[in-house]
Length: 259
Image (cartoon, rainbow, N blue to C red):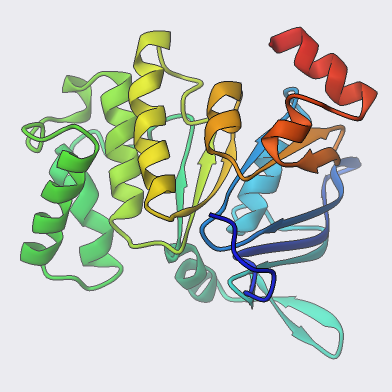
């Protein structure tokens, strides 16, 4: 799935720093993900993985560095070497092209599965209700939820809700998908269904950045695995290298504790 290096990276993060008050959470992250690739961020809790993910679509403002998505500077415009934050409207336009799936499903509880999916395409992208509805039905079928169109979130299991959330993100036709530990809130027997949907997205060529504890998924689906700890990327490379033959002692100790 890897693309030639001449293509513009889908994600090009350069020396990204992020502080919350006096606490520096990201300490100079470099990360490149090419179109069609899947990159997994792994590491202990508190290492900065989710913060990095949220910086990619400007849900968190970076303190220093730059993040480009498909060649476009995210969250800022540059003038004479200085960065100026873009307007909320412009940031929303950028964000509309980047799908995001959270740990918690964040579905509208008072809307059916179908209504959850068509909301943004109609309201944000101006799609017709008929067109959005047809695509929503196709997406629900693709994530194994045909027949659940009229179910409310409370009538669905956690795994089903997460699959609706994925379908909702895909409905916006994003160029990039971000997943923040999408299976961590699920019962173990429901995890597989969600991971299968994500694997299918990867097989279909979707560029994905995934924060995950699912090492089997990372090994099978990722092109790149980056191990983060203490706000830095300790080690990055193909899964066969990082997961099966880690070079750094910190990576080795982390993996030995979970594998």
